[in-house]
Length: 512
Image (cartoon, rainbow, N blue to C red; front, side, top):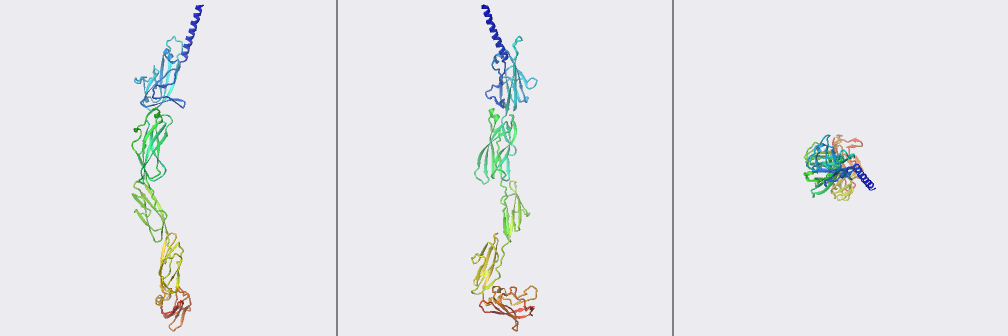
């Protein structure tokens, strides 16, 4: 019975060992491919394990079976087959010591290596896939277990230090204000999100103190995790005239940050980008108006290299007096071109007449009326009414009339005190009614001031040949009596001004 019991006990032990051996054979499996370097950690993005490394770093990877893997590897040795896709010149394979090179065997991009880890020295940026195939080999040919095997994959992003550079000339001149901001082209190198910081020093054209501002801009230049170069722009405010100096102060990259790569001054330009916004507005005088007979001096309001007027002149200014458009085209000292035009309006003056010099007797007055409607009246007497009354003592009287355009005109009249000798000097003593339009009538202009005056003309025999009781015609007497021309002779006149003074008498010669 004891032998049977021990036999049963041994059989139970054999069953446990068989069960353990079966478990070891079936539990063979690889864990994830992981980096043993403490500088880097894998991170899942979009369901993938992605490792971020930088050029020049050596990153050993190890593969370890989980559960009974260690024991299985001890009992059943494994062989490892490593693949690296991508450019075969982008990396260098080393043994796990990080020193001894590994030789690539065909087919390309894979190598057999008995250990569960290798080291990789990265040479070029890019996205690489690392895959390891582990196969457990039986201890001996009598082992009845099937060898276990597994494959694991890890994506690695290899990044270089990001950089930014001016993409073109480092100075620019804008000839005039166009927008509130101006785009400056730059050349970026990096992966995914790149952040550029820069400083703007604005010096106003007016000479005020410079204004300093700091700017930050983030670019998403690529979405595939590979280092790339991209043309982008940074914005500079350009809403005021003056000089904007742009200084790049830093650059960071999302991948480089994960790799622990800090930016250096060599990663961005040391020279300053200068943007000059010049005032190229010519701004000729607008809405120019002058009065008839005047001239206007037209010139430009800024410095220039050359100028061309629409009149053909190349002088710095021109005198204009005729209505119409006038244009100037200039080239400024900074090379900018500018042009502007203006229109000249010419308004007529409010021409009027106060009449001929007139005579006014003592105690009488006459009305001076320009008979023109304007915006303002100014008389030498100080009055500002459209008409004024003057008397024998007024003397020289003038009026300045100004219209709504500011155009003025002046006329004057001499008011002479009334007396017989003065009036007689104003009465012609001869006329020639021969129809030659020269002194054809006997005009007495002074009588326009005496509408009630009577005029009588007699021949040498005392016969009345012409009479005007009042309103002596302004065109004068034509030398006819009852429509019949009188012969050449000397005639005599009697003029009663009807102002209380004694009549005026004298002679006149009718010459044919």
